[in-house]
Length: 255
Image (cartoon, rainbow, N blue to C red; front, side, top):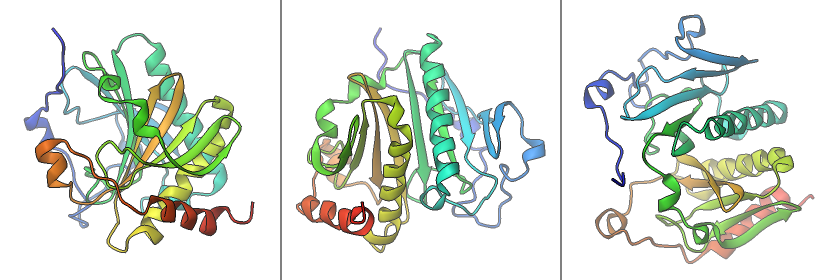
């Protein structure tokens, strides 16, 4: 039997803490001494089991990115940024290599429209026992207008986005370029939060292993288009070339 859906444990979901909207709520990630299910620590970065595993037939883990609750990926010092991406990709690849899962998702939520519940910066790695996310992903989702490129890695804006309107891609063919992948993602998240749209305070990072490449899709988040919700028809902005030039001017001109 082919599995196409994940099943959500509603009774567990109701127990999850939330402080993106309810700013007065206590942050469980700040009380590091009380964290349960810790798998590994590397400096301020903690890898642990998710206390609220809301998805059936999965193995859910979290990476707490920093001990600074009010920090955010777009402003991390380079040393910490690079350490975080090396650590995250390592754990993602470890779960893939375990052979226990049909596929392994790696992603990050930030902001009120991202689908997240806690403000403290974190990522999630989830092993799926029955569902293969690659079946819903095509390489043409990562084709687009080039922003920058180097040997073994490139950065672009999707001309055929998965959901629309504007999606950014970082495509890494050489694992030795993981620090540059982190640099590109940081540029894109900073651009989204500070230059893209004054109403945009949310984004997602989605990591993919497809066609022998490791890729990240960086997605500014707003209310989802009704055309996509109702008909699965993506829309693409008509100014992606202008956006690419703006990012080059703001972040890459001095190279």
